Amino acid sequence: MMQSVVLARRPTGNPVENDFAVVETAIPDIPEGSFLTRNDFISLDAGFRNWMNEDSGDEILPAMALNAPVMGLVLAEVIESKHVDYVTGDKLMARFAWQTHSLSDGTDFIARLPAELEFNPSAYMGVLGDTGMSAYFGMTDIAQPTADDCVLISGAGGAVGTIAGQIAKFSGARVVGIVGSQAKADWLCGALGYDAAVVRSGDTPLTDAIGEACPDGVDVFFDNVGGQTLEAVISSMNHRGRLVLCGAISGYGVTPHGPNNLFEIITKELVVEGFMTHFRHERYDEARQQLSQWLRNGVIQSPEHRLEGIENVGKAFADLFAGENFGKTIVAL
Ligand SMILES: NC(=O)c1ccc[n+]([C@@H]2O[C@H](COP(=O)([O-])OP(=O)(O)OC[C@H]3O[C@@H](n4cnc5c(N)ncnc54)[C@H](OP(=O)(O)O)[C@@H]3O)[C@@H](O)[C@H]2O)c1
Image (cartoon, rainbow, N blue to C red; front, top):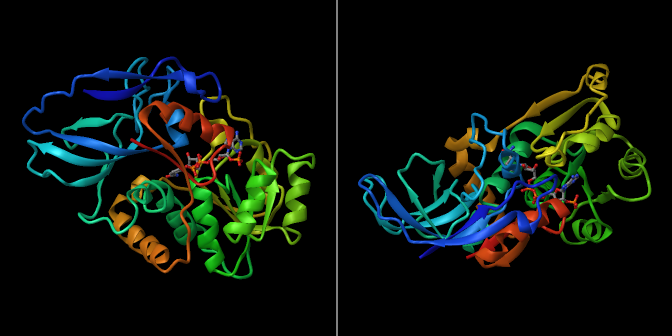
């Protein structure tokens, strides 16, 4: 038998644990041209909230159906194959549903992993997976910070933010994070080398708090949050600053707020670039090699918010939106 996490009801605003349910079904037969995987880890990625609303389908994914398995990213191993390109034992990072097993004809979004994994397998979902590579591409390709820069990162204690901040530190830049709690702010500065952190839900208005933490203004903003956070930071940017738009979690599945000060992009001559990591698929090996070297040398850490068991996948997903996670959220199956 296999287990699947299904969308039991459509979330209203931020998802909660009871929006999801676990169902058990027989493991399917494998048709010619397909293969079956055992999934060892599920990666929780906030962006998938975008396809949980009824009318949310787009060119990347169709809207998720009620009572159907929820789409996500998994670490999988091929256990039986009738597909010419996949053999038993192949390790994959794939866009498969939240299930203990997956049947694929190979047309899904799949990134192959090395036959021998050098690091803890869960690292291939985080620092060596989609989120670590997002930090890598966004920071090294687009932001390109220097020692003269103040780099501000929102969602700084999440999967992308923890890695992005550590990469930015290599440049000698001052690195500041925006987070949801004082405990997370203390952790960023104490354990991950951030120079300062701003608590977004504190008593001080966000622009004032950013001004205190970045007294010379912000040169680079790596944004995971969007909305009011982006609006506050635009007002704190220096002339010709760079906005690197990675995510917009504050607007996922809800009506996004602002920003309503886009005219400042013109007056400050800001450079704005968004990116999608999966469009850089052909460079995954390069990114993984560089991130692996940093891990091997001990110059970056890979913090995890780890839960166990498929029954905890819904809770783990809800944790992202409640800010419960310190680092990459994964569930070991
Ligand atoms: N462009 C790409 O290719 C790509 C790839 C992967 C991920 N992403 C995006 O990158 C972003 C970060 O992903 P991740 O996996 O690092 O996320 P994560 O680990 O889920 O962390 C997200 C953090 O965002 C904060 N947050 C949640 N709701 C918020 C809200 N309404 N307002 C402000 N902050 C909020 C929470 O921290 P606090 O409560 O501490 O603030 C939470 O821990 C997401 O937007 C994701 O969709 C983009």
